[in-house]
Image (cartoon, rainbow, N blue to C red; front, side, top):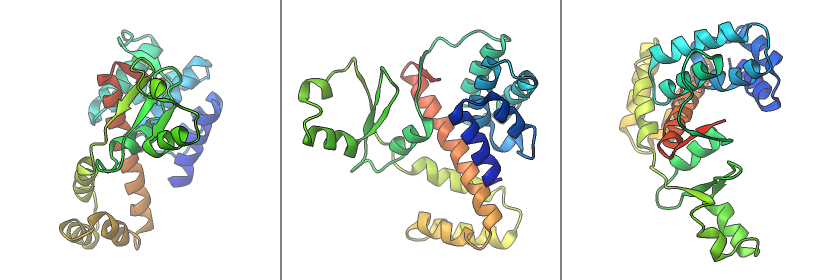
Length: 230
């Protein structure tokens, strides 16, 4: 799955609708990549690629059935692209949701950042500080509320809950016990990956699970601010 997910991600990045449909018609399990697939299929639909509409319809149905954070929002956006639902009352902004999620779930003591309301570019706090240090940005620009959408980090609480939820999907009882032990000890995030390292397939499944959850939460946060990624 990791190479197949990367293939789909690469096709979306290139804006290659035909490659997106080919990836989703291959061995990729749609349920495992719904957030990624929903965004990618909008590109394929815009390019009128054969088979995109049926895949998008299936994606809408599965997003609504799954009901994770951000799933309903993406289902509405995809249905609007299909012409089977009303357009969401949100402004489009070309935001990388993976980058946004990295700020949202960062350390509240040292993280933070912003999104450019014009371009959708995501800036981490370190990049903002560097721009100011080298004179590429002044106080007036930094404090312009019309230019920036500021992002306050919310910490790792949701990521911890993702790990708790993932344990319930693990079929191997021994691994499930190891993961539960990792969460109950010190430095749970480090010990979690250590525990999964002996099960590479489950480790990759965890990366996909975590990505879907994080991107969905970032999508919800962006919608609360009045925007939709696109």
